[in-house]
Length: 244
Image (cartoon, rainbow, N blue to C red; front, side):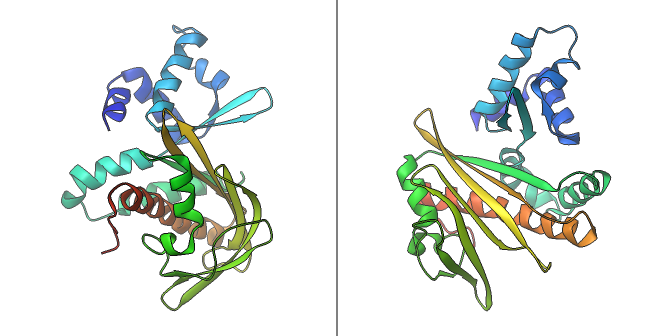
């Protein structure tokens, strides 16, 4: 959490987050908003934000795309603000408004969390059917082991089948599964990275149609994956089930 406070203490970095809150941007696009700073200086600010998990970086060809990651700020909210608020309503409204404003663009989101445990342990917490039931699902029909696996996740009476499309031990898992209250599947990608001896888990999900039902579905999944990552962190680090 100290890295988050340090990152947020600088007005330039807060401005970068404000810009990324509006829409993901390449590093070059961000540099154009800071004419008094060199590209190197902007990159230093971005690296501080990245090390604090406040942004997610995705490289596509020569471009480096930067996305805001709301999870660390959500942790601050949960710890110091939540009891004074009515829940997540204001965040969800803003998220929906942003999705509606960009309806013509492809709907997708990314969230990430850093967990102070070895990557193998964190990866196992997601792929092992017994462990994932400790913080996310109520039951999983099988562990995640290979491409082509079909696994049923259960939350009480509600069930969903995931089909594994990518699997690389201790590195990545991708799958398709039914979108929330829509009649088609969406695609989720989990990436596990070692950063300074800790594990960074990021989730990217996409595949919704650009309509009201797609926006509402992505909204609910975004909130669900945020809860899942925070639940994973609490269980792996402290053996605490946040659902109780």
